[in-house]
Each structure stands twice: as structure tokens, then as C-alpha cells.
Image 1 (cartoon, one colour):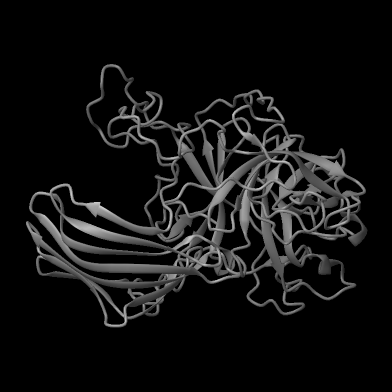
Image 2: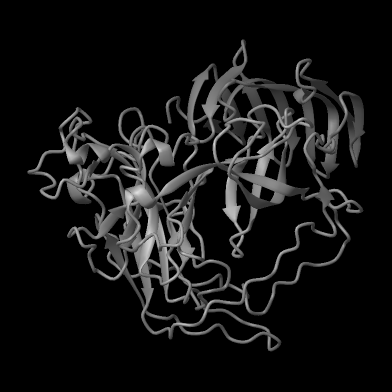
Length: 518
């Protein structure tokens, strides 16, 4: 799950206002004045500190509608999404804990569930400003759920929601309506057939995004060599699948395109033309208006720098509101061996995540833009029927190369592939009086190898050997310890474990690698 920088900037060019004065070309309009934005925190179910059965007592939640934990979940499971069509609710994925045992009616508020939260301060008939959509859905209505339940998104029809790799449906009833009950709700997994005969569990889509037409879907998927492609397809309900897993009512991804231009150039291609920024976007020193700039930056305030924006923010259908969620910095990003102290949460129950709503108070609500009618097959892309293989991504082939310096010297470079995957695993370079710029000469040797620590595709192990010397305008060295510098890191968590040292010295100033466990 990606992390946004602390200042939340409006999507695209939605909010435009000067943050730094400067000179602007007469060909571009002056940025508009900042608009007033009111940021409030939206309510969530009450917090309980224990996940023991029955910990969510009537004292904590008198209505018996569930409790959530202090943390976001074992795998950062909490995530807020976008708005219902009327803008009166947002959808969120939460983890209920501490529910009593069955047959207590409150036992249904357990585990990862999908809820709606009101944005206007109103309450549902049960007295809560939230409503659980998936709690208590009978097993016959949800015979198989995909465990991936991220990036919740409400269909524009209002009667369905994308819930990770599942679709939650209330038939013809709005998700927010009283008629949308557990017994009228069905949950269907999403299946992507990738084998010619249709057998197997299907492909592994990620980062699924629903097209505004409620019919098409975009997603990405990793390749076996560590690359990634993006895809576009159509959702088709399959009430009685005869092949492929799971054999339950499901939504199939059909008419799949792989988003590769048949006649395109490599992804990174330079024509030599200068970059021009659209005049309605960035200009000069202006980069948009910070949504949560108002405040005193105190603990718990809307612009408290210790609360970090998370993916994905969403704009209401009438453009008058922006919903986003934040996570508070916690150990090991602070505290312990980290010199940064950990803040104390001011959220209810000490919760370290919160949902925020930014109201654009001076903006007159507008009608949603017309939905673009997407074709089943994109003209420039490639059809990707079941059984297709992904195109080979461009990469420098394994082998030995010689790179001549633009001014002097040479670098002997080796690319070594992983014998199991074919991906480049090791790169080494030996420099001899190498120089691309007058006054800067490099000598020495460097070698870096990387391995994936499966089954976690986000976790890498790196071995780094370096003995580099730079002379000239700046004198410097980059040297690892005798046995090299080793690190393991899960990039989704961004916490590094190290062994050995990597030390850089530039004109006598010493720089070392980040501390382990930070």
C-alpha cells in the first residue's frame, strides 16, 4: 500500500492556489486565490485494546455493533475508500475484534468487514454513524471470499462495492438503504482465467480499479521475473462456472487487454523536446493548494505532521468533498533505537489511524462528468485471451560490457542473471580512471546482488561490496566492510535489517548507512 507525503495535495489540478509567490509568464494565468477548506475527522466504531473473545463489551459499545483495534491490522488492513453516489457516505475496510461468541447477535462483528460511514453527521437507524455491509452475511450468500479486500470502491449504481478481489452486491437496493440487509447481500469473488482450458485458480491481479461505467476494470500483475504489466478487462457475472477455481458464483474478467502499445517505443524514450506544463496545472513556484494546511500542527490537529496520508484519497461525485485516511507514525519508525520519539495518539481509544473529510465550503456542488464509454478492446493495446504469455520486457541482456568514459578511462561492467528466473540478479563494475566530467575521476570496484525472499514478493536481500575512490574536485571513498554490506528489507514496511557497513566519505565528511531496524 503506497504512503503519501504528509501534506495532502488535491488530486490533479482540482485545487489551485499560490503557495509561493513568484514570476509567472504572461502566457499563463495567475494562480487563483486559496479556497477555504474545512477538515473534520469522521467517526469509526469504538476501540478496544484486546482481541479476546467478548472484549468488546456493552460498556464499550452499548449498541453491540462491534469494536475495532488500536492498530490498522496485521497487514495494514484498514483502508477507507470513496463515496456513495449521493456523497453522503464513504466506504471503508475495517477489522472488528473482541466480538462475543455466538449466538450473541454481536458475534457477527468480527474480522475484516466492509462498512459505510456517514459524511454529514447523520446516523443509521441503529443509532451509529456507520453501517456494516458484510457483517452477518450468511455463508450461502458468500460461499467463497477472496482474502484480498483492499481499495474499497462503491459502484456508481450504489448497489455494489468493489472489495479487493470481491464484489459486494445488494441486488437492486442501495448499500446505504435500510433494505440492504445481511440476507439480501451477496459477496462474489473476482476470477481471471489465464489458462487455455480455464482450469486453476486464475491470475493474480493487484491494485484493482473500477471504471466509472461499472463494467470495466483496470489492474496490474507481476511477471515471474519481477516486472509488471497493467491490464484492462470487463466484468461478467458467471452464476454457475464449470471450470476454474473457485466453482462458486463469481465475476469473471473477460475481454482482457494487456496495456502494451503494439507499435510503441520503449517506456523511457527521449525525443529531445522540452517539457511543457499545462497552464491549468503547475506553474512557476506554484504546485497546488494543500488540503489540510489550516491548523496549528499540534497533536491530533488536521495538519499534525505525525499523521501521514495513505492511499487512496477520493473526491465526492459533486466535487465538494475529499475523503482520505491517515496513519500515525509508530515504532519502529520512531522510538526504540530510532532517535525520533513516538507521538501519543489523540484519536479515540488511542487509535493510530483516522478518516478525514475535507469540505470545500466555497465550492458550489457540480454534476459528475459524463462517463466515458470504454470499448471492450483498446485500439492501441493487445488482446490478452486466456493462455497468452506476457511480452518480454526490455532489459539489458546478461553479459559483460565495456563503457568508455566520456573524458577518460573505462568501466568494465557485468550483468549476471538469476538462473531460476532469468532476471538480472547481480551487477558489478570495475572503474579505471573513469571520468565523464572534468575534475572527477573514479577508480575501484563495486558489486551488488539482490534476491527476492519469497513468498513475500516485497522482501529483498541485498549484498553490496564496494571499494570506490574519487579524486579531483571532490575527494571521496565508498567502502563496505570486509565481508560486504548486507541488508534485508520489506519495501512495504520500509524497515531495514543490516549486517556490515557501507561508509561514504566526501572531502573528509563521513556518511554511514541508516541504522538497523529503522
